[in-house]
Length: 444
Ligand code: TRP
Image (cartoon, rainbow, N blue to C red; front, side, top):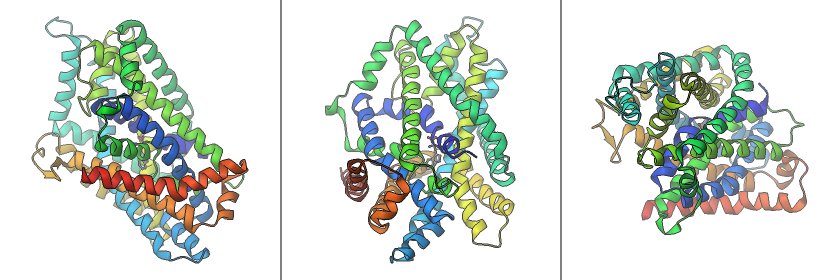
C-alpha cells in the first residue's frame, strides 16, 4: 500500500474524531488544545519521523530492527525491549479501540435503519432521543460485543488475507471524503447553531489558570495516540518504505493532515454542544450524542449520517490494522508461524481482552483497576504512560544510539539548522519533556 496513504490511514482514526473532542471538552478546551498542538509539533512529529526512519533502516519487524540497528552501532541488543513494550501496548490499545470502532459500526446500522432521526411523536426532543440511543447501546452487552467482534473479524481479515488492495482503494476516497464531510458539518454548525464563536473560543482561547498537570499529561499522551507513535506501529510501516522518500517531508504531511482532521471534528461538534446546552466534559459519548443531533435535523441528514459513520468505520479499520500488523509481523518473522496463524492467535487474544472493555460499560462496571473501569484503565495506561514512555525511548534511541550520519541520510536533504533542531528535539527536548510531564503528573 502506498506509504503515505497507509500511514495517514493509521494516524487518522477514532483518536481524531472521537477522542480529541471529548478529552478537549473534559480538560477545558483552549489551553489543553494549545498544549496538545505543541506536543504534536515538538515531540510527536520528531518521534514519528524517528519511527519511520528506524523502521526503514532496520528493515524487519520493530523488535528485530531495534536489535540489529543497535548491534550495528555497537550498542546492546537489549534495546529491542522497546519493541516488547510496543507489543504489550498494541494488545491493550486494540482491545479498547475495537470496542469504540464497534460503536461506529452500530451507528452505521442506526443510520441505515433510520434510527437517527427526530422523534415523530413530539414526546421527546432530539437531544434526549440521541442521548437515549447512546445510553441504550452502552447498556447492551450483546450490542457492544457484536460490534467489537465484527471489528476484530474485519481487522483480522485485512491483516491475514492481505485484502489491503481493497482497503487502499477505500482509503483513497475515504480520506478526502471524511475531510469534505467534516468541513460541511462545520459549515452547517456555523450557519445554524449561532454558537460557532463560542465553540471557537472554547477550543482556541487558552486559560492557563485552569490547566492541571494531569491535563498536560493527557495532551502529551494524545499527541502520541493520534499520530500512532510510541508503540512502533509506524516503524512497521516504515520497513516497507522505499529509499527515495524523504522522511522529514512525509512526517510533516501525516502530522498536518491528522491535526487538521482533529480540529475540524472539534469545530463540528462544539457548536452543537453549546447550542443544545450539553456538557463539554460529557466524556466518551460526546460525538455519538452530538453529531446525530445534527444529522437528525439536517435536510437529507439520514444519508449524511450513513456516509459519516461509514467513513468513520473505515478510518477506524485502517487504524486497527496498523495496531495488529507489527505484532503479527514479529511472530511471522521469528519463523514457524504463518501470517494466518499468527493473526488468528493474536486477534483472538485481543478479542478476549476486549470483551472486558465492552462489559466495562454495563455488567462489568464494578470491576476496577487503579480506580477506573477496565476500558478507562486500558486507555489511561496506554495513552498516558506506555506511549510517552515508548516515545521517550524511541527518541533516545534515534538521538543517541543511531549515528548522526545515519539520521541525516534517512531524513533526506534538509537545511542544516532544521536538521540540527530536529536532532536536538530528539536527543534532549522530547526525552526530558516527556520525563518531566510523567513525573509531575504522577506526583501532583
Ligand atoms: N492514531 C489512531 C487514531 O488516532 C490510533 C492508532 C493507530 C494508534 N495505530 C496506533 C495509537 C498505534 C497508538 C499507537 O485513531
